[in-house]
Picture 1 (cartoon, rainbow, N blue to C red):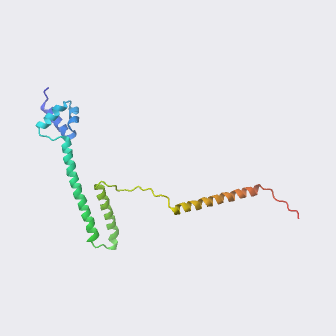
Picture 2: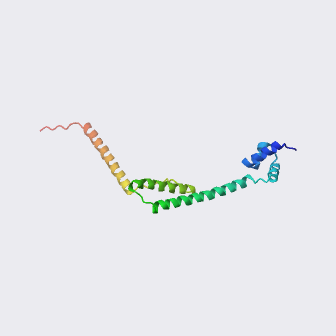
Picture 3: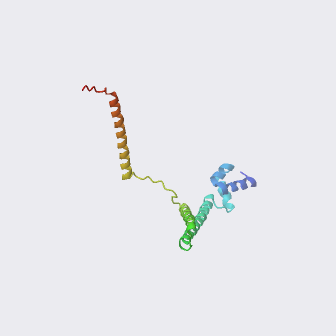
Length: 154
């Protein structure tokens, strides 16, 4: 089957953007034809382009992480910190560390469940005892109000 130069150009542009399989589906061109055209045009596959792009981004991220660590080290060791700037610098270091962890793919938040401490248990027991004492006091008052008055005949 013969394809127009426009069909070929559109298919190759699609190939660059979404890969061979999707370009073939979108343009109604057999997959083998798309690969043949791409090879003839000297195009790399979508997957190869993505791999190269990912490698470049990884290298850039590593450079950024190194710069962040260098900046943190400078802030901590070489700068004279006035008391009024200490809070600002502490915040900046915290942000730098958070961004470093983010770029390294580490967790930047914590969700920890702390177990109940002994003091928490003691407080809970004390509150429970107070509640029981209050309930007992109300029960006694109710009993006293239901009891007929004693008749003392002296």
